[in-house]
Amino acid sequence: MNLPPLVQSFVLHFGEMGSRWGINRTVGQIYALLYVTPEPLNADQIVESLGISRSNVSMSLRELQAWNLVLLKHLPDDRRDFFTTPDDVWQILRTLAEERKKREVDPTLSVLREILMQQPASDAERHAQERMAEMHGLIERLTTWYDDVKKLETDRLATLLTLGAKVTRLLEAKDKIVSLGRTKRSPDKA
Amino acid sequence: MNLPPLVQSFVLHFGEMGSRWGINRTVGQIYALLYVTPEPLNADQIVESLGISRSNVSMSLRELQAWNLVLLKHLPDDRRDFFTTPDDVWQILRTLAEERKKREVDPTLSVLREILMQQPASDAERHAQERMAEMHGLIERLTTWYDDVKKLETDRLATLLTLGAKVTRLLEAKDKIVSLGRTKRSPDKA
DNA sequence: CAGTTATTTCAGTAATTACTGAAATTACGA
DNA sequence: TCGTAATTTCAGTAATTACTGAAATAACTG
Image 1 (cartoon, chains in turn orange, blue, yellow, red):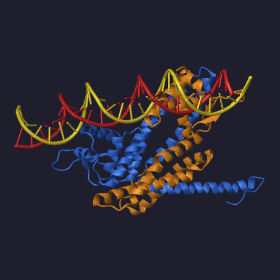
Image 2 (image 1 turned 90 degrees about the vertical axis):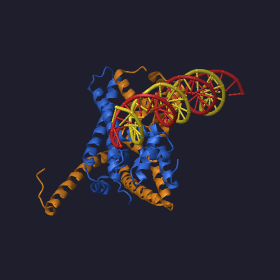
Image 3 (image 1 turned 180 degrees about the vertical axis):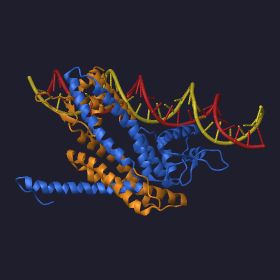
């Protein structure tokens, strides 16, 4: 690996994080490299920078494309493929969320639904279904929320985050006041 | 594996999902089994149900305990360990979020901060630092929001989710009205 | 304390996943 | 059309991760 030290630390860290998810080390490293590099890179430049085989780069780029995490660019009079990541980190976050949902949440929801359709044949199955219904309910609530939020553009989403916290605090304050009237002992300050 | 068919589907699915994360198949299966079973189970019951070795169960349970995803129970006059999951799915979600943050987000934040402290030695490094600063900013915003939200109790959190969506819609409506006054061509309905 | 049961550890092996180099395919350009 | 550069595929191998059985340890009981 042949990179400016500061970039190298970042790339190595992403490699580690990658293997902590399903993503493998190389994929993580390539992504990190593309993320911090100003211009798009071609496959051979990646080979060079990370010291891995050409075929590995090819497969890893394909993986990143499957995740929609990478942009394919073409320079004039050059038929090689060049790759970058989107500039907007919020957009990256959205893509990541969307892809993870597609791969992890949606299949789970559909398995749950399928099981919940079936007739329980014992107490054990009846109880299991109840538990799965709870899980299903939770996931549905979360995805409904997510579907609402995901359409927001970058600056709007940022606003919502700050706002979300404020709403929370407001709810707490309201609740405190209400409980003052309800409880026997009045609570201490703060 | 010797389980009611309906439970088995669930357990197998969680096994698959497990290996899609860092979590391995067995850990996922054990968790799923504990989740849908009404009473706590001991290690031998898990061995029996999933058809895996005693030692594998021991190691996997240790892993689940490290994730705080499992509760250790003791029955009177029985010195074996029994395991369950918490009843409240929202609590489970919170634990999961907390642990993933601890393992994935916090280390990344600290790597980023460390790199951002350093003096860039080239244009490449300078640009890389800018990109890392963007990522750092995003993560900080998200964790601030998360820190606010995570303290909420179950019902409060549920409320916030529904509310969050409403706030979003409100923002959109406001924006539409404002833009009506600003733009040259008035936008179509809906 | 010796005996019994429960649990953990760990070296060895099995299974899976990652990576490579060589060959095949694709996409041009002359 | 042939030749060349870019990319992909894939069989084989390396590296990693998961799992087992046997042995060790821990925790109790009489």
